[in-house]
Length: 241
Picture 1 (cartoon, rainbow, N blue to C red):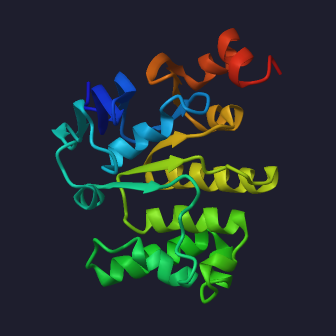
Picture 2 (picture 1 turned 45 degrees about the horizontal axis):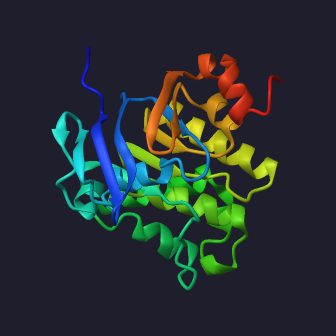
C-alpha cells in the first residue's frame, strides 16, 4: 500500500489552556478529494490551520509524503507543496486581481511555469482574467472566492486545503466553484482536503469524508456511505433526500 501524501497522527492543538483538537488522526491519499464535516466549533478549520503551519500543535505528528512536516515553518510548507485557500477568502483588497494571483507564486522562481499557472487560473475562472486589473476589494464575494482558490493554485501545490469555499455564496456560484475544484482534481490529479459546511455538496464532490465533533474524529467512510448514513443525514443533510 502506498504512503498517504498527507497524514495526521494523534494531533493535539490548544488555544491557551483550551484543547481544540484531542488527538485526531486523518489520512489523504494522492489524487483524492477528502472532506471534513462538522458543526461550527468542531475543529475543522483548526485542523487545516495546523496542517498549513498557522497553528503549532501541542502534540502529535503531521506527515507529508511520509516525512514530518509539523516542525517545518509555514512558508516552507508552501514550498513542500501544501497551499491553503482560507476561510473568509483573505484577498488583498488594495491589490489587483493579477497582483493577488502573483503573490500565490511567491515561493516560485520558474517564470515560464508561473506564466503557465496564471493562464491556467484564468482558464479555470474566466472572470478573473476579465477583472485582472481591478482591485480585489471591489470584486463580488464569489469572485473573491475564485481569486482565493486561484491564488492558492498559483503555488502549484501537491495538496490544496480549502476552508469553507461556499460560505456566503449563492447556490449557482457554489456549483461553479465546486465544478472547478472537480475539474482541477480530475485533470491534474491534485489532492484536495476540503472543509465545508455544505455537507451535501461536499460529499457529492469528495471521494471520502471524516466527521468531526468537538475536536475529535468520530466517523470516517466513503462519501457514498456517509451520504447513506442515517446519523449523517440527520445531523448534516437535513434528513434523507
